[in-house]
Amino acid sequence: MLTLTDLLHKTTIDPREAELLLAFVLKKDRPYVIAHAKDKVGSKVAKTFLSLVQRRKKHEPIAYLTGEQPFFGRDFLVNRHTLIPRPETEMLIGLVKQSAKGRSVIVDVGTGSGCIAVTLALECPNARVVASDVSSAALKVAKQNAKQLGADVEFVKDNLLGKKLKSELNSKLDVVFVANLPYLPSSDKKTMMPDVAKYEPSKALFAGRDGSTLVIKLLQQIRMLNVQCSMFFEVDPRQTEKLAALAHQLFPNHKVSIKQDLCGRERFLIIT
Ligand SMILES: C[S@@+](CC[C@H](N)C(=O)[O-])C[C@H]1O[C@@H](n2cnc3c(N)ncnc32)[C@H](O)[C@@H]1O
Image (cartoon, rainbow, N blue to C red):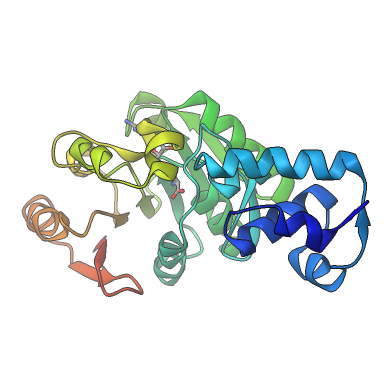
């Protein structure tokens, strides 16, 4: 019989990732694997672990292998229909929390796994939270996350600010739009890591030739709505200046600001 250490030594993937996968198979956490290095494992565990390692070697992301990813301190279910939540997106939560007042309606456009909407519903319990996505498969995962984490979120299947989502907003309440829409130019596909390019949904990554198509369309749609609102977008740092200039034109009575992510890139466009 092999020990946990023997099994880990059989792999050539990143040691930390191997420990995470072994912890997942054992239904324990990584510290358990480290602390029980000399424990023996059965052949079923060994076989399952080694098959996951094979998939990882073909660049399948760890989050898709384990089916979950942490975001803002909570575990979210993910699958091949949802983007894997990114740590930089967590900054949006803090930015929106500062702005959302008790009576706000928070609208998360392009919710994916629901990480933003579910987190905001839990962090801003007085706000009403609506989340939309064009993908039914992503919405299914987002609904599971809301249920599992006990968040009250209304889900709508719609293409950006279409009829269904608009009908949710015909009140005079303060609306806070938050969106991490696809923002990469389609040409990026050639140069990006295979973990992303081969496995994450194209629908969640790419938006036209320069990546800004969907954000521009949403800004124009919000402009046509007659509601008091503020907006928080995660964008491609290569597009931030251009989008900020457009926001100034479309919303001359709003304050337009840009915030950097933790790596100092101009990642967030804020219109209040
Ligand atoms: C970059 S992912 C972000 C997912 C999630 N908000 C997050 O931060 O992890 C973008 C999401 O927008 C959705 N999407 C793409 N085009 C859309 C559209 N026209 N209308 C609504 N959602 C769209 C995709 O299905 C995907 O779930």
